[in-house]
View 1 (cartoon, rainbow over the protein chains, first blue to last red):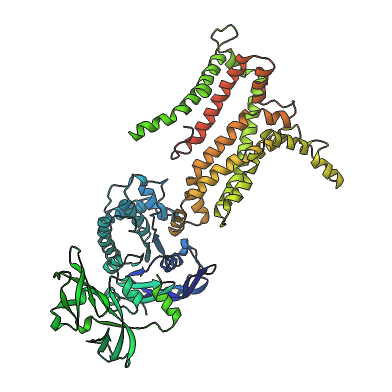
View 2: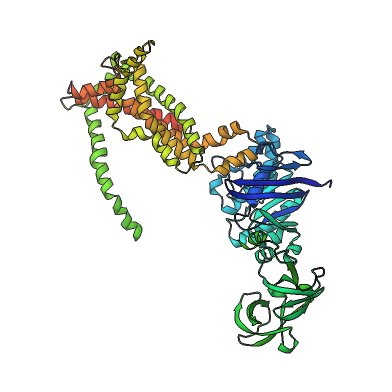
Length: 357
Length: 273
């Protein structure tokens, strides 16, 4: 428990009748990359703004190293934010932007100059001190925004969809850059995004949110391979989510065919949802398959082919590097450990939370 | 191709500008620099040095500066509050504040005359309650009141516009970087709102400096502003040359004051400089 840096305890927040966060509990550890992931309106940005001090929760507590900071204004919190639209001060030069926080703290001139140099080097923009912010590209502005935040040596850096406005290639470069920065600085990053690929690439821990509720917390591998419900499975990558019946431990009946799996403890003849990732489905000769069907569509995606296979009244999405032409009779086979079993949502409320997006 | 064609759309305005701005300006310069015998002279400019004219100019500068400062003091906090109000029909609120602009300027000033008159509405009410009467009609105070009342919307609007365009995340960023509310205002909000402040100052100071209607109505005919002097040259002395010359001098003062103001605002583009 010693390295629990920030603790959010039963945080609730609503605007009028609109509940943004409902009784949320979450803690952050030191020196981790934590990502809040979810569709727009899921409460991830509000969570970040509550951390930063820009919103006050209606209920709940925020502890920073055990100290209650719920009522502290942003300027008294030991964390800094990188805003979605960079929020640079356009009436100042790059150097003045970076120096802003340090000048407020009345640091010496020499210290500030050293820090500016160091920060610009860190974000690969040496010698940009005297440029105006408006002469910079989006990616460069984003780097300055990061530099401006980290010179204050925050314990936690909050990033609100910082790469959202950048083009794909730049976004990928910046992802690696951010990971490098985090490792060099040794501070905690809290990153908000709706881009699942970004989340999977960078995070130590992903918090999947929807409609003000945390759906799942886990490592990228956990979240991808073992989604706890249909929402998470659907939101993180493509998947086949199929209603099925758990016959007994390690055996599930999917659309009338029995599939061996590795899950236990669901009981007998229990309705469940099954998640199978498209790349985990093997297309085999019909006689070797657990199910048989025929290919109904075929699209070349670059790295792989995307195929749809009609089997037992359902389209199965399949990714494979091997091509099976449309109309071909194929067997479907899935390795037992590639089948992820999920409980059906228990109540209608939960169902609504899980399925509405 | 398209751009080339678009250029012609500016043609009506160019015509307008030439006919009603450029040519009259040259005529003023011409009249201002000649005498009745059409001979070149600086007399019309140097006439400003006459004690009565100097006094009028000095009073105009003083009253218009004071009115501008008062407008700024009243308008900035108001504009700032208007920006922060979270309301669906905020534009209606803004509309109410600039509503006076929709009424006839002369009517508004005459209304003040009726209100402030020795036997006017305000004093009638005060007499009724046995309170001491106010006696500011025909004083510089009444002129300042008239200027502030008439020109305040011109200060509110541009300041409100720039303030509402400031990205709230910039303010958040300053707070995030450790600035308290006052520091944030001083270093971020105010500098970013300067273009609005400057156009507000311009839009209040210039008409206040040149007005003759307000001083006529609320100052009686006792208080002469430079605007009144120029008016009299044209209307009663029928001396276009002296009137134009004094106008040119006034123009120089306006340009000087605007230059002083914009010196403190290097970033803002598109203002008078």
